[in-house]
Image (cartoon, rainbow, N blue to C red):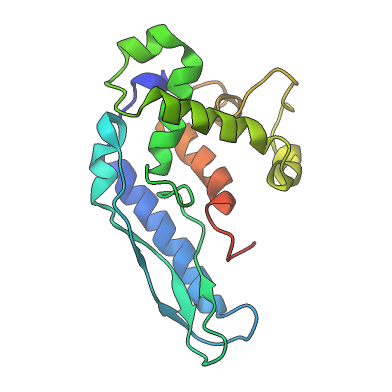
Length: 189
């Protein structure tokens, strides 16, 4: 079960490599508005992971770029599989802890130490619930098969579909890929 799963160094190396690949594509494309060269301008991060993502807490830089042209200087922050937007917790932690809460109080008590406050995890669940009314969901709903039913909740319904019913690391990474456009507002596509 996913709520018993703890991320390891190998997973975070995979996520960091995917972030590097996405960042390289964004840099190669240049500044969207003016076509200028993008220079590296990373954000320092102090990610939290707790028991689920302790191995990922060493990833302390969010890749970002800044246009080199005077007068433009716009930021381009690529989508990320490591960081879920501006949240302090690693994306995998948000996903796994939300799934643990969905699995029920018994699973949360039996699983690895849930070091995230219950109030924070409930806030994450509310964020996932609101996604179904978003333009992001409208853009990807057709790629999710079978379609979500009215009572099904995100993210557990996504993880189930992306894994073909088997929960585990691959399903979580696939879910993070699907969520990655939500991690930035400066780069689309």
